[in-house]
Image (cartoon, rainbow, N blue to C red; front, side, top):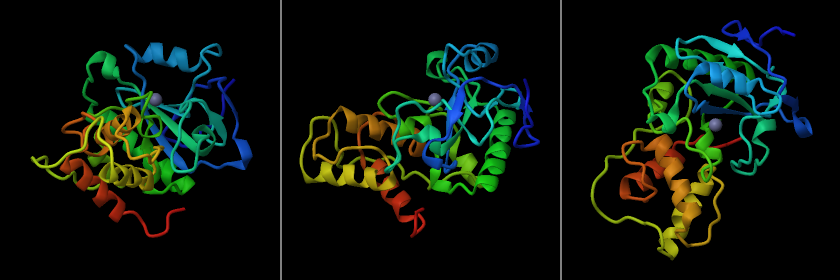
Length: 253
Ligand SMILES: [Zn+2]
């Protein structure tokens, strides 16, 4: 069983793990993952194992090779329970790319330049054909902050942005000053939560810096302010978030 890939960049390795996109949804998000396993072979075996019930549209190998497992018009099973803005069926609304990397369990090995070059080429190809907006190119950790940390705080989002992939602003430098952290309550916490929700994170605006808020701030830092990922909303984190919101297109689809 094989198929024609959606892009000349990839070679096919079909996975049985996919279904129909629900409610007529089209791919409107691009979600990036790391495999988090010790080897590419183990990851490819799992992503094609019918009993594992997981998959992705694409896998990018460490040597830059690109594999397509699921056709883009099908619903691959990569995001799980997830949310962004008012979308809670990310699998139906996205294309998923798994990047071979051991991840946090392997102490975050660096992504090689040749692998990142392939990720960029693949993303550009997908984004162009599917008309996916820059601010809808997201980390798995962005859409599932309580469960996921991939592709991790070493993933070079700034490099991708410089190549035309994703939404990004230079992170504000870390300095001293006021910060918000676990246990605090009140209007400043509510304002922070509202800003995170405006950007798209699935967060309850309740005025309490609870575990969920700490996890969302950590996810934000993993993507946009990687120098320190601690779930504490320091001035640099809040300024970076403000700058990102200010640079969103005026009309977001
Ligand atoms: Zn993932």
